[in-house]
Each structure stands twice: as structure tokens, then as C-alpha cells.
Length: 249
Image (cartoon, rainbow, N blue to C red; front, side):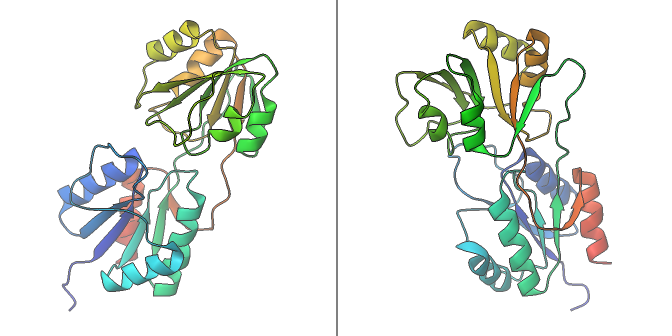
């Protein structure tokens, strides 16, 4: 039917995904569902229908798209969720529907920053100098490579504890962003941190750790983003809404 409302699948896990859901809810022109992978137990759920759990790869996502009569996939997953974005692009192409992506701008070094770019988690763990006290902010899924470094002291900040037990040389700090600049200053000073490890996630909710590191002259091991397949992309929610509108003429 020509006047049938289009249905959008939002791949969530970011603040922008929640904002997109709120924007579409306020707009009222689309039906939509936001999907979370289910890795974080406690979260602020977005407006509208919510689905929690994986799809079973690109084939499972395509099956969901077809069974739920999805007309467009809006990929607002984390910048480091390369597999999710790859599955989204492949499933949407196989189902013959558009896939648009929110590409949150990466952080860029500024005057006073001392960044060491690395290509992945293992490289980041190897780059920490022996004897250093490192604030590691990579999340719980990939913390094992840092726990394995017994010649350093680790303060690992994450939202929820990892599946593995923290070793004696590692301390867990469980906290949910956003973090203020004063929060980051206090953490760095209180834990005698001398190096920061971060993914280049971009965004405002955790950028203050970089500002605090710059103030203190701390080096930052910055993990570069993984490659994702080409997609029609936007840098903010409003641009993504425009892409959604454009996809439907």
C-alpha cells in the first residue's frame, strides 16, 4: 500500500541510537525497533519497541529483516562494532533494503596531546611500558590482553565486571559515562596513573579523559578504529534522519 508506514530497524548500543529512537518517536512518521546485542545488563532504554539479543550473524539478521518486514536498517552501533556493521550491510543488501550508518566523528589529537596510535587491543597491551600504571578504558570484553601483563599496574574502568577474575595487579573501577573533567582528574591523580589506554570511540561522554591526560602531560595509547564496509553515512542524528527520509523519497 502506498501510504503504509515504513519500518526502521535501529542497531543500538550508543547514545546516538537512543537519540535517534527519540527523534523518530517524536516525528511519528515511521515504525521502528531498536535492537541491542545484550552485552550490557543495565541501560537507559530508548523510546519505542526494543529487542535485546543477537541475530545469529548476517543470515539471521536477514531473516529477521524479512520476517519483521523491515524497510531500512539504521546502523547506530559502536564505532568498534565492526562485525555488527558488517552483518548489517550484508543483510540489508541481501534483503534488498537500504542500510544507513551513523559514523560518530573520531577524536583528533590537539596541541599538547601525546598520542601513540595502535591498530588493535593486543598492540595496545604491548605498548604499555614495563612498570607503568595504566588507566585502561577498553571495556570488559577485551580486557584479558591487559590482565596478562604482570609487569604493569592496571586500573581498568568499565560499566560491568568482566567474566574473568581481575589479577592482583589490576583494579576494577565500575562506572557508567558520562564522566566530568573533575571526575577524570580525580581518577588519574587518585590512582597515580601515568599512561592512558583508550579506543578512539569519539563522542562527548568520555572525551574528558583525554583532556585530563593532556593537562597532566600523560601519554595516550590510542586504539584506531577497525575498518567497516562502505555505507551511506551521517555524522550526527539529524543527518541520519535526513538519510532515512531520503531513502524513502
